[in-house]
Amino acid sequence: MDGNGRWAQKKGKIRTFGHKAGVESVRAAVRFARQTDIQSLTLFAFSSENWKRPEDEVSVLMELFNLVLNSEVKKLNKNGVRLKVIGDVSAFDDKLVNKIRKAETLTAENRQLVLNIAANYGGRWDIVNAAKQLATQVQQGEITPEQIDESLFDAKISTHQVPELDLLIRTGGEHRISNFLLWQCAYAELYFTDVLWPDFNEEVFQTAVNDFKSRQRRFGLTGEQVS
Ligand code: IPE
Ligand code: MG
Image (cartoon, rainbow, N blue to C red):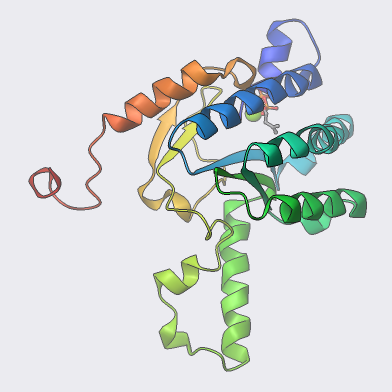
């Protein structure tokens, strides 16, 4: 979800105005995912590197996260959305962590859509975290190093409960992954758009999905083999 700051600055407003406006785009993205055959949507809300932004911007983002949890969880639950927060939440204050855990428990049985919110998330963190868990299992004699394969590793990755990542959309015009779902990106289709996040809506999402559907995914095979 990139481009909030530039969107605001183009309007002569402060950056945080863009973050606030971006909440409506989050609603639109969730609505779209729910109404189509998308099973899982992961939104990059706050990266492990975002802490280094100016203090007031970080505090507005935290406040916004709190407010959105307060106002949206009930609705998400009513609409059959399962909410998960992925990332190192231990860095957030206890009240926020409690709110997150309560929302996850409340929505745990919902099956309409899995909504992952990546908060204090980093793709490298995710991989290191998986490695640590496997190392602990080896140390405790539960598995041997030889048993570690891609599927065992994948089971420790934060998005393990949802299907393989198909499509990664980045708004805001940059052509990079910026430490998002690194492990999960292996065979994902990448889609970049100049649309700034507060201008993202169902139509933009649909255009990205249409583009995705027009691609041939070969997974290392030849075109003849997959068609
Ligand atoms: C949103 O966009 C990303 C978040 C950290 C919430 P930015 O704040 O990165 O916006 P730009 O890139 O400065 O326009
Ligand atoms: Mg940015």
